[in-house]
Length: 105
Image 1: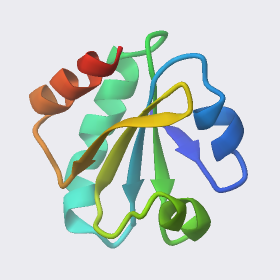
Image 2 (image 1 turned 135 degrees about the horizontal axis):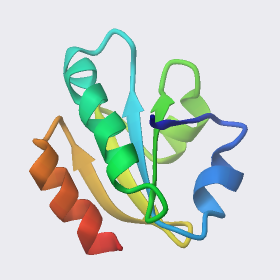
Image 3 (image 1 turned 135 degrees about the vertical axis):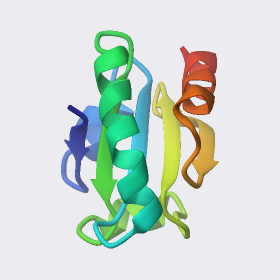
Image 4 (image 1 turned 90 degrees about the horizontal axis):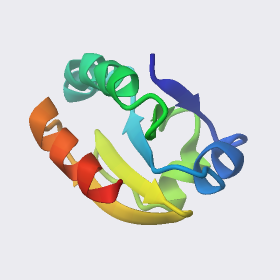
């Protein structure tokens, strides 16, 4: 199951993480986000112990979303050592997400 990131835990859980983190910026009303949700949960299982995989609701955590300039959802950021190393906008197939995430490991 994917982790839940918020404005209040983002610094500790994502920026200070000792492993790469995939953050899915989403909203409950977003159709493509709903399609991507099961893939994010699968990735969370697949990468357990290698990367953190989680979701951040942009409607409830606007500060973090605006800090990273998230204008379209879903937007996925791969963050390593506190820095964005990849940005994906839109719902990509799982295999493409795996390739992008593996590149950051």
